[in-house]
Length: 309
Ligand code: PH4
Ligand code: ZN
Image (cartoon, rainbow, N blue to C red; front, side):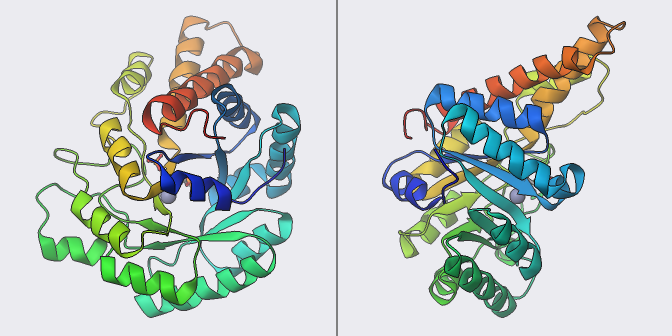
């Protein structure tokens, strides 16, 4: 039981049709719900921390909570920085003991993304950590988008091969139609599987990462709405598409929105049904259970990662 890198997890996942879940953490209940599910499913696990999470919970608290989770469960966990925007935040996290960092240079031109990623790779590798980078832009995409426009945002396979060769990055987040949040598609859900297969063919040994991979399960949206929420038109990536992606090199699947929805639905329900309650433990305990249930469902039924530890 320790903080580990994603190296062994990805090596194993790359050889089979499953992916490691990377779940975003912001507080104790979220961490506890996730690790309990991974323990129950005997699954490999990545906990990831965004800049927003660092700001909300403070890095020292999150680190200690993850260390506590390892002690409590006996799990090996990879602790990952999600969407690091510059060298400094990546360095800070590596120095703090994160085993993996993402440098997100996707907004820069290819050459600058390569330069920045290489700088982070050199530092992280010298300190025993691994690096995820991103190529292509994640964005909401309409299903009738033209090929030219797709090429402007989606990952170009040849560039992915050049990028990996020049940076030595350990894993690569690609853009094939997913996006962050609860409103991913205006029309029918669409992912560019041809492009994914082409990328995987060119860089078969590079673990690929799918951001924006929440499914936005209708029952959780409905539950939020039933108990006073107002989130119409929410739509995510169908579970079948996530399962399909694991056949073509997707080894890490990022999930945050689904946890938010599960947690919020439960808190809304509890507070509406028990208007006299004001003890946070009364609504945070079922919220933690909802996170555990959601993560267990993902590991078992979507990522196919049960017993892959
Ligand atoms: N992420 C999560 C990004 C969370 O600033 P922040 O804490 O809100 O950032 O990287 C994902 O890919 C999650 O995808 P999802 O929205 O489909 O769950
Ligand atoms: Zn992301």
